[in-house]
Length: 395
Image 1 (cartoon, rainbow, N blue to C red):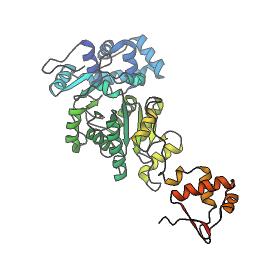
Image 2: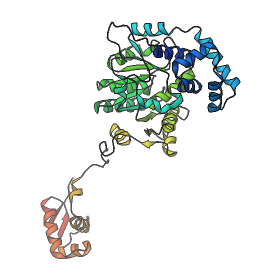
Image 3: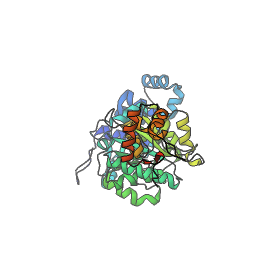
Image 4: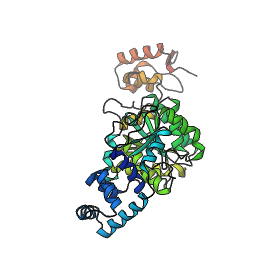
């Protein structure tokens, strides 16, 4: 929910409870998600602060998640310890001062497709930027791939991002070097919104070289994170945030990826969520495209080479069909079957041939052969000489 400029941010009990819980547990913690699902964020926070869950809720969580009561209690203890240093009011106010808003389930701006994550749904999202998150993600495509992208991968991602932006689609990616940044920049060149899903707080610029890029994204799109302000990126947070990239978009496209690329983790989330997956093929000798080729070979992704094919894959049935690729049209393509047969029957070397010989060779009657020979001569394909019909030199 976006606050008017200069207005105090909403600080209702539910919103503050979610802000506190985002400090208590790691992003995507299914046990915490299940606790919130069972008793709501306010009651969940109250029980964590008490240091123990009620017997009923504790037993239910242990049963649902396949854990022992001791395991559940250990998690609660860890959450409670983190809460000792949490100040949700400070987080909300600090976010408001820098232009960030806390979007939670039930807000108008909350993207409902995130609910597909079940207990892995974010507790809330910190959002910075001029665009509306929910509206931006209604028609969106995730473009992911290698950080150490080759010039080929950068070109593919930027061109695809620009083409999708021109068609009115939002590009979602992770804000990293390589394919991610190329996709964001491509969308921005088309003056389309783009969404960067970060593995750190929205107030922490990572990678540091993207300070200017993130500034432009704030102006035209949004930066989002489920990590609280000041949170630094970690390897686990990169992997966890990938589920958001997959869930927010209608489909994921891998522009370039090696066999051990983190982009394949995003693909696995997309497949689990029954989202479409496309992969761009690269040179068969390129290790940087081996991950894409594996996805295609395993049948986990469809081959896409441009934005039109991406929209054919993820767009509305019958409305976003890509044209069938065709080779270069040449004049011979317009000839009728009989004319082609006559043309093939005329010898390319040596003396020419008479109409009767041509008709027999072409397998048609003499009158049809004469008619087609006249049309071919008028079109400049053949010529008549003293020794009969010959092919015209068209060099």
